[in-house]
Length: 302
Image 1 (cartoon, one colour):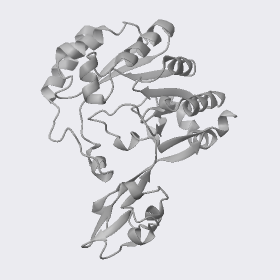
Image 2: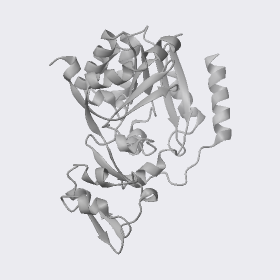
Image 3: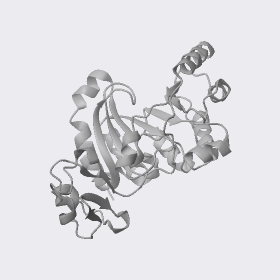
Image 4: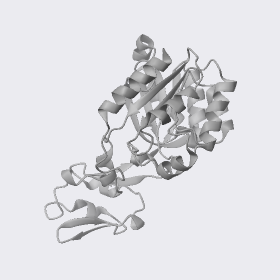
């Protein structure tokens, strides 16, 4: 199949991003991820299939409206005492409720898109890429968990002379990353912890393949620009010892950078929209600790 015709599951295309690679970039958010990080700011990205979301603050109430329950062909949405109830096991993902909703309270995360469709959207902003040295960033979810689609998209971007970056959790076969690296202008790679057991408890997977993959990159793509990022999560990896251990495993090269990210809860409302609990309820970042940590990192990095 030609690369342009390959399809994959995404849930958003975000333009004018300036925090996910060099310059002004278009982010393509892939749907599906092998990890289940407790702090994930995009919980709607985790499943590989479309899923319905409901924002009750936008709902007119079943007494006033009720269009979603009337439109649903499978009985997944019912009304009890004026309140909408949703049975996910009955939902077939048809989107009838979304089309019927007049306020946007009902929505679906996830849709199939072809490489040519995505590239067409990305190319709309090529003038901004040229001025800012920006381009395309694959994010998620985990883009390389859909390797055929992700690699086809990277190849097509290169044919269109679009700069390419990927944000990745690193958990997939090494051969997939090896091919991706030949098509990338920058790799943004998360290392969350060096403790395999703790990594498994907080993300659902150990870190063995992740560390294998990043070491493969360091050894086989020494000139590739790499940004290693660590989200600093209270109760998980928020000690100077743990973060500095991660920093020390990263080679000192002008093309390899490191960044410790402050924990935030901006994605918390989305958990409620898709009917999942937020497991870090009440957890807050320690701003004083982050200032001390970043000062220590700056001193170490020179």
